[in-house]
Length: 453
Image 1: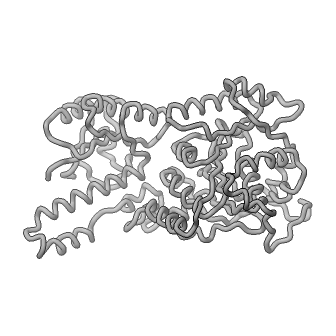
Image 2: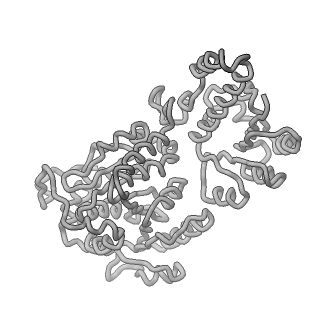
Image 3: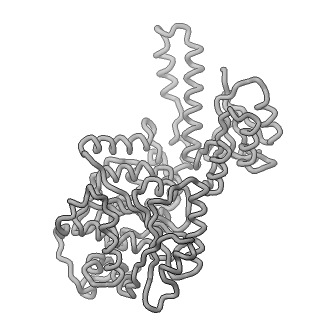
């Protein structure tokens, strides 16, 4: 059959392939695949003359996968080695880059690569068996196509049922998303801009800043969407008083649903978290494509992120035109920021677009922006004023427009930053406030029915 693919995987995963996303797959029976469970076996096999199409390193019995991958790469620097990572930590990404190792991130991407390689080998075998390419190749290949596996055959990747997988059978989700984005780009001379909101730890007010920033962009006349990439426990829709929003999982499965994502009632549009929490990990790999799609449709894309850093944060940082890094008055927040910047340096993430903001500033606050700037070796730090209980109460009641219309110190300090975030090419759109549609909103929270968490 010619070249083969080499898979380094520990004995338990070889016995129970569902651990690595390959449900009911008999790995040992695949003629195109050579499997090895120890580092000694793998290094000895690769030292031979026989060529290998791919070398995938998942794990092994006697050392960590990253260490085995580095050893195989060191044995032959010209050889392509790919590490299959289900964690995707910043340290692992940095070590792979330093060693020249490619990274396959998450079960969804690995299963996709496995399926593609299996299909390719099956078609190759079929071509070898067909005696006459002109007379019988079509018949032989068509029967094979009918039975070919796809990513959705391995249902465990998306945690959905048959027909509800994140990877469509005939066309990849990534391709469909980018196709919709490209069709829009052809009609529009320019796309929007992306502002993401990050933090080094939780509880700093990141979601509040993202929600209010989106409202202020919309107030300036910019067509705005708020994207909640705190994929497990985000509440962006709730903070804006919107209970029924299109989820990111729905956009991945059906990119054409972007047409339902529209600002209304003076509020920005919202792309919410997935309906099923267990799908959050599988959706991370589509972060860049979803942001590209939204950037092609909106003037301003505001991204809220989770407090636990993952590959999602790397993709968001790379896609953003501006990044707001939020800290609060706790010394631990400053330390978390320093660690996050160190991670960015190891992963090769440019921090030039980062703008650092110290939240909850007041006359009696523990820290000032100057204190934080000194702790971060001279990085310029801005301030967001403490808005008091009013901020949490109005957003908790789903009344963001009332908060934006108030003279709350937090809103006013955030409003001062907004013009600095808008690219010059889009400032002409800031001619007037966005009109409020179809709804008269009261400025008195007690009149409108308040929701309970």
